[in-house]
Length: 444
Image (cartoon, rainbow, N blue to C red; front, side, top):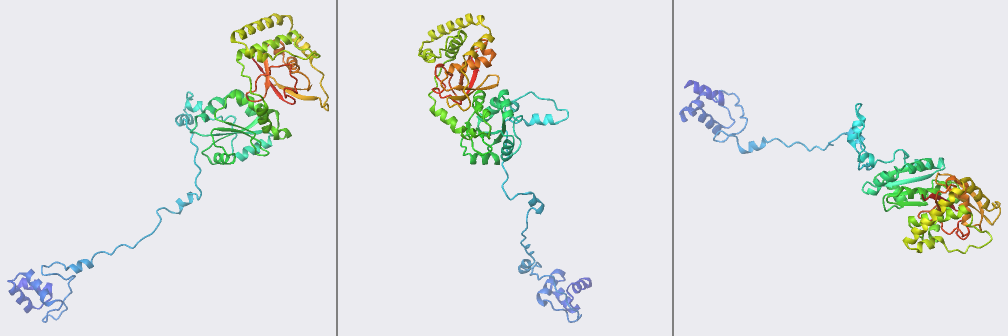
């Protein structure tokens, strides 16, 4: 019993009499006696010991558990609100205040092949779609539009611009068929500054906005002096057509005063020219054979007698196909029978004798006329405005040995879709060819 009393005194700090009475009241149950003591005495100490009674850590109820209000007071206070960045200044310095330019995506780019070529042990792969539709890097200018324009101005060349779109297959057709053509590459590389751009890039968007481009792909010839575009193509372009339509720009330098009127001149030619007579290939060959036969015999021209024969092209066009075939075979036989009798030198000499005298530079009755031959050569001569077209044909026989030897050819204006010149009796003035450029092409 004394041990229980001693424990009670140690816990409560009460005197011996209080401890004894409380323990007796609880039948010496220490836990109940302690609870009874704190319930009846509170924080007061026992009178016998005179020592201060320590405060309990928290008030307890009759069952010895913490009071509800004390439990609420012990809940941890919430953390203070903290506002901060999820990334630091280093990350921010890498960003840009302006929107990034959309990167160009090449539809047929072969990343696997590029990776293998980049390795030391990489082997060349067979050409696939990437090689078939690859941009013409060999002739492309590397730089911005302004740099390409400045380079064209420094080299006195026309600027050829091609704006493409990955969503338009015609753009890939241009790379596959047109820009990969050997003749096109030779002409463009030797006479133009070629700049290709995608419409998704910032430079492509600026060019589209400035030249008001609404349809892609588009190809423009731009004068680097004025920035004007005298010629525009949309969609895919046939290589041969592109070559023919670039000829006027090969004949006029950007500093040539005539270059300022080149675009309007081409449009005026299209408006003033009558609709071309759509001759078939057989009809063109038959017409050229007939002209060649006349040139060989030397009887096709009579300078002092007006030519009143009907237009050969009209005659052939109105004949049925059977008649055209018969006429073609007859003309071919006539040419074959007559060619062995005269050499190319003799034909060229006779053509030279038939040429009219060349007017002086100040003669108002004369005009300049140039001919571009199939091999790329160009010859120019002054003719009387009243001279017939046959004189131009003789000029070709004099300057081209193959033509004098009997190879069939035709003459046409250097304009897109220009028909072959058929009526050789027309004068240069009547045919509106004074100061024109003619193109000679083989028919066989």
